[in-house]
Every structure is written in structure tokens, then in C-alpha cells.
Length: 251
Image (tube, helix red, strand yellow):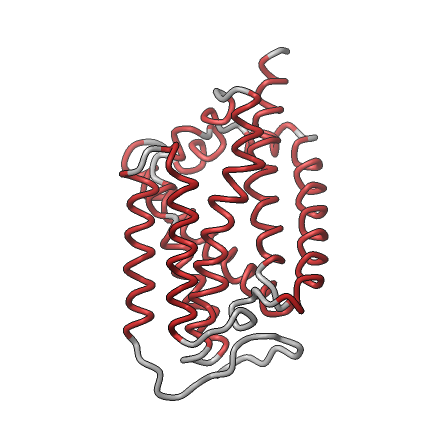
């Protein structure tokens, strides 16, 4: 049974659309995921993210979606910016509260971030995350994939499939994260069991995040809304982690 979301803004379902464009998007995402996580040097990450975003947008347009269908319409820019601004403020507040207490502060203790220079953290937070991670993933999952699914399936099915795909996208980058984050490692354990649990936890949490991001996109009409939330959780997360690790190291 399809859920009804009053005020939701998403593409109209069309009968008889071919399936091969969805398959093409799936293959493109798999290739990009492997290249970004296992093949391409980190210095090429922004290039691959940009190229991948352009290719995915081209597939979406060739499939029949327009920019409004994909949450990129100019008429919904302002609502998207408002949603994004509120999201960034909310995440900032949550991070400030979390960093104020010892137990929750441990969640920020990612040693990979603590080892970076201040300039590198700024670049990662203000350039690499928004123009790489956020741009590619929001174009891929909330703009192109969701739009193509919504034109073929009901709204609920489209949200669920795009969210699951987003969760699976995080399998490769989540491998080994339990070894870098003490708080995560203490929960997941070590060795193969810890690695498997860390991957499963990452897939589950990012799947739920995918549902939230997609709902933000359909209620605002713009992918700018989830882009703001997405950047805040990642970009501000890196910044808070670095500051807290450096501060702790001096005491």
C-alpha cells in the first residue's frame, strides 16, 4: 500500500517506461563506488565526483526526467535553501551538545581525522565533502535515481529502493572504520566480526538516512535540502572531530 504525503513534490508515474536506464544507473554507481574507494587516488576524487554527477544527470535527462523532476528546478531553490539552513543549524546544535559530554564526545574520536593538518581538514570539510561526496551522492540518489524510480513505481517503493541503494553504496567505505574510531570499535569489537558488524551498521544507518534525505527532497521540492543536511553531518563532523581530538591531545 502506497503512503500518501500531502504536499510532496515528485515526478508523475508513467506507464511503459523501459528498464534499461535504471540498469545503466546501477552499473554507473557500482563503477563509481569501486573507483572512488579502491582505484582512483584521493587527489582525483573531486574529478570523479564531478564526472559521475554529469553522467548520471545525462542519464536522467535521457530517461525523460526534467530538472524539476530531479529536484533541481529553480522555482524550488528558496524552499531548498530554507530546509538546508535549518538542517545545518540543527546538526550544529546536536554536535555542540554531543561534544560537551565525555561519553558522547568519544563518538568524534576518528583517528584518521585527528592525523590531518588544519588546512587539510578545512579543505575536506569545505571543498571535498560538499563538491565531492554530497554533490555526487545527492545527484545520484535523491535527484536521478529517485526521479527515475518515481516515474516507474509508487512513492513508497521509490523511497525504499533509493534508500537501500544509498545504504549499499556505503559498504566499501565502511570497511575498517571500527579500527579507526574507538567508540565504534568498543561496540562492534575487533577482527572479522567487528568489520562485518561495522559494515552492517553503516548500511542500516545510511539506509535510514536515505529515507530522511529523500523525504526532505520531496517536501521541499529541491535536492538542496538534503544537500545541506548531508554536508552538515559529514563536513561539520570532520571539523568537530579534529578540534576535539586536538584539544584532548593538549590536556
